Image (cartoon, rainbow, N blue to C red; front, side, top):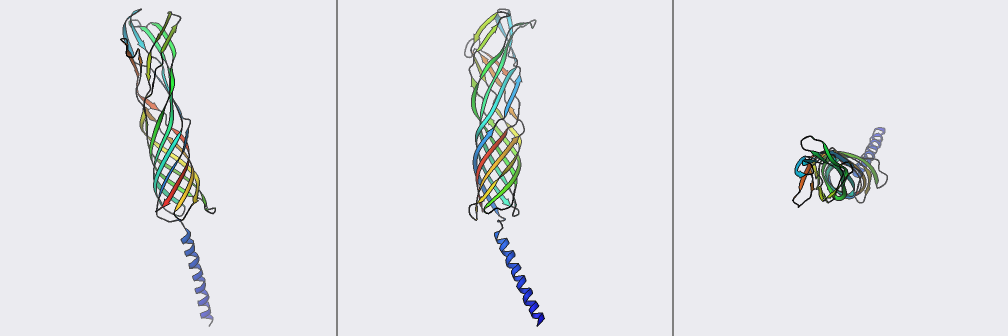
Length: 287
């Protein structure tokens, strides 16, 4: 009799344990796939600067016969500012806490381009300086920079607090930058008291375009909010960084469209990678 009682009691405990386990598993997140989409505000304070000398051009006749003209210290600067971002991802749950995804990220941010350059006239035979002018202005002009990225991410969901769950994530990938050349029309104002030479000439300045492929990494932190069994709203912060991109050749044309038109150019160069911060609202759907 005691044996049967023991069997009944043991069976009851096993049944309770099984039911408790089944209830726990039933409340765990799906181990399937998900789709994520979102948009947000992008902020950047990245600045770049490059200084190089132009080619030299012979011109005659001049006051000294034949002159050698050069634009030394052409300085192009870029300042990147705010914009917007869009992201799309497909991912998979690997455990109740870990999941990973493949993400496409598009960021569109403001780019201000500006700078200065010097002007130099030398004797073509001796190299002696005849006249010079420093800090000719390239006024600020605004365009857009487009960054396209493919990222591989991993995220870890922390403890649940009701329907709210904080998380951390990180990713690696590749980025492509595209931002076109800009054009300004600032005259050269020469005022050299040593010659003396006072002269104003029309000029056109074409900035480098930005392009190229770079490695990228990112860090994410945010909060998941379970809207339903299959849908989750996500508020997240994203820190995004790339390695260097490329800047194309730039040109400065004096007396454009006139008989004395002269073209000076500075070669292509590397330009510093971008750093952006984003605040985003995403929706994730389990499939």
